Length: 100
Image 1 (cartoon, rainbow, N blue to C red):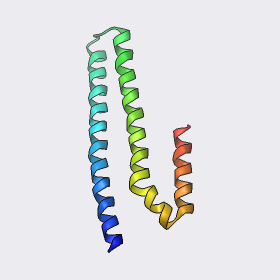
Image 2 (image 1 turned 45 degrees about the vertical axis):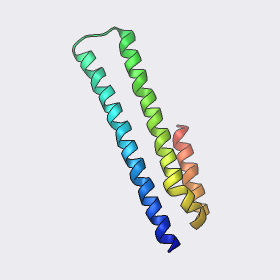
Image 3 (image 1 turned 120 degrees about the horizontal axis):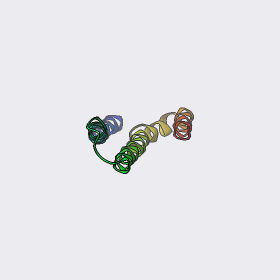
Image 4 (image 1 turned 135 degrees about the horizontal axis):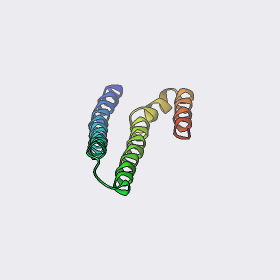
């Protein structure tokens, strides 16, 4: 019964994270589209374009942070109990990806 409850919570958390992830992706897509329109219309100063690009960059950083959090909450904490060696290797790979 405990495994069934854990699986259910895991599923609910994952669904919540997926919803938040999609929201972040859509926000970034909107920012990219706005920058593209600005450039296509030959509008806005270079400074405005850089500001928009930095907003996109910050959005991507936020998305990556969210994805790592999602992994830690939805997967790693359960794997640490079931298979700590594999979980540790996966976490190390994620940190490696973050540093490159």
